[in-house]
Length: 363
Image (tube, rainbow, N blue to C red):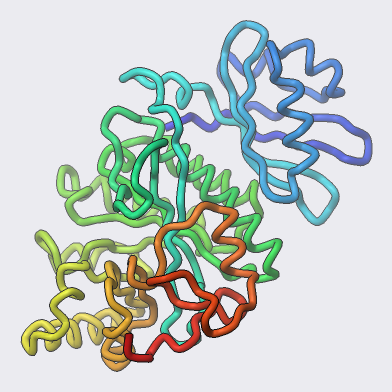
């Protein structure tokens, strides 16, 4: 995980870049107020050009890698604010050169829509990691053990994409969900990074949601719960993922300050069995009594949607509803208005604001 070094602000009015680094070796190198020309002398190679382009397009969010003249790496993440400034967080170079070697090339986040079963609209997305050459239909949400920077990269890219979707669609309530692992929960810089990204991109409370599995926290449940509580205080909402698989401990459900519950695909796939349907009914009822929204994941067939609604599920996601999309495709799905026959094969048809039409029809 990249350490959070401090804050930065770009003033459009006087064209100055200000850094506020709290401590460490980057403080002397960066702190102060710079013109872009002067700051360019502290950079190496094409970094100044990349920074100029990123600042120019900051309305859609910003994540810019910079190389200092001495070879050290930093990243600026953030976005434009209504007050005419662009601001965000400065991240250290740990993400560029993790302990196990450089990050796997070609990381390309994609986003699987999460549909509101009441309105038919896309209300959010789950960010999934993809690498160049991977099949877009394959579920690659699991982390790569050889990329210790994955969580930081995914969080930055997901927040950047979310800020762009919210601004373009006029829907500030849209959310994005990012998976965390036990290794991520052990990282003391995680809370600072999450807090800085929420503030830097101007996200409302709960728009960034972090998916946790019980298995990810079993190694040290006490420390994991403390981290989960700190993330909640930082403004991220927690999602208990894969419920119904593994241990599914009710103690973990009682302790975790979660706002949402995702029921594992293995149960959803067996919704036609009477005993499984009874289990799903009670899981949804329990989730609601605990104040949690409940999502059905791994939906492979739209024919189960009436059953999910009847059982009380608020949300659904899966290949039967939509394959994962890149950020631009996701925005088009949020914005497009199409006719009933315009949807791609195997996916629901948009009817406006990311909605679905004829979703209950026999296929």
